[in-house]
Length: 122
Image (cartoon, rainbow, N blue to C red; front, side):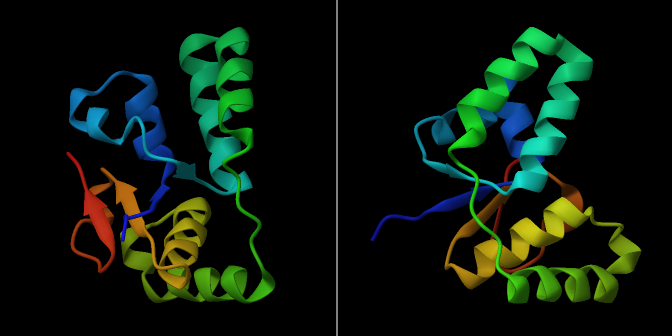
């Protein structure tokens, strides 16, 4: 059975910037949340400008998964339980979504490196 991935914001930005360590994930189908899409738009807008940000937004808009109430609540509890790591809301929601859907959480965020279901790429 093929592995499916939840791409956190970090991994999407690395792909956009052409980080070769993420090249093997280029053809994978990305799953993100609306919160990741907002973060991605913000980063690209600031680094590359509005035109590029709009293009990236359009490219990833269809990858957005709907988040149900229980996933959202569990994610916020996860963030509270791990407040020393200072995880973003978007990352917590994505991590719990991935966990609940049998996905790998793709990231280069060192705070997640040792957690279950994480596929860590430096």
